Length: 80
Image (cartoon, rainbow, N blue to C red):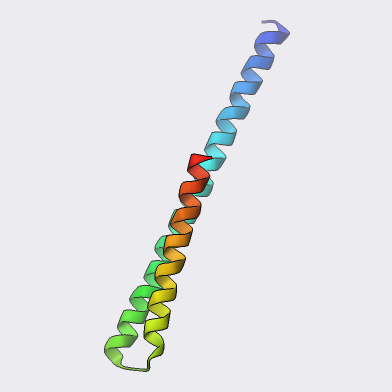
């Protein structure tokens, strides 16, 4: 095998590694959005039923905004 073939294989391996890193980072942000939804939105709904205070509405809205933002980051990473 010549140097050119070795260089081509190294470049191919580098591209695969970059692709894998992108996918893993996108999955990370997607998982963060799931955790945010579970913690903030569902937690806010539970506090709504317990009638603790008006803060539940702010928590739910903030949770939805964070979920949408994190999913947007995940999609941006996959598209770039």
